[in-house]
Length: 344
Image (cartoon, rainbow, N blue to C red; front, side):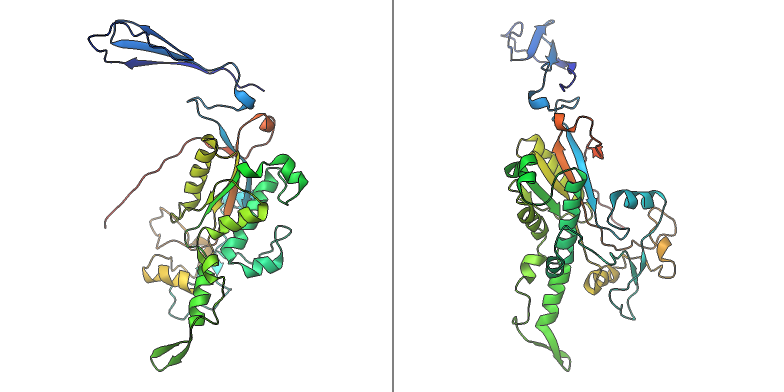
């Protein structure tokens, strides 16, 4: 299906050189006519048909759409169910059960992913081996492909639908494999002699503690699992990591560097070191007696935010005739990158 012809005109003020009269410059697809040397009207007409059926936005950019979504959250792993609970105002915050908080821990509530089941998306052995943020990320990414109607298992069926050389992964993380790093640190310091710790060396450390701790490993392992060979890296920008990954994925598609991108972010830092760090700066809510009402942004009685695990991925694709009549979760409309600072 050809995209409707786009026609628009722009009036520009041009400062003509005194030695030049009427503007006679011309370019392919552009018509110029002088109206006195200082104001030129430029009329740009789009081609009647777009190559390969690719749709364009009103400002002439390639249209990029979200063709699939996948989540692994404290509210469950189903996108529709997750969204319905959000609309209903249902909270997933509850007392921490994975470990016993210290008596001095000011905050003992969080959004835990309880009973995580990788289902058919990865083996339970692999899920136990890697850091939780990586396991969640791989499952969410494959769910996004499944939502888009694209096979997530290697084989002829996937090869028939996806050019793996033009499919990439850009999945970020704010804190990376904090579980792996914390466990490795604890294995370094196991014995105490009075007030001084006894360093027992690296022999009991997991040899994969560094690879599983760095933020880009989730995106890398996802690509290795799927066989994607397009753009692959991660962005770490605190709570905005996922948004930045989505925006950069859109640019990769528009620049012709990829046709499909898995984008999003994942974090799994509900553990003593993660919670303790935020508690030390008094950033977490202490509304332990009412966990479901603890997260209340913009509320007068807000006393901090609530920590939770929330990996999510989206499958971004270049809009073409393949998506005509398809149920698309969303399309990207605009973006904004700003820096805001406040001193109190």
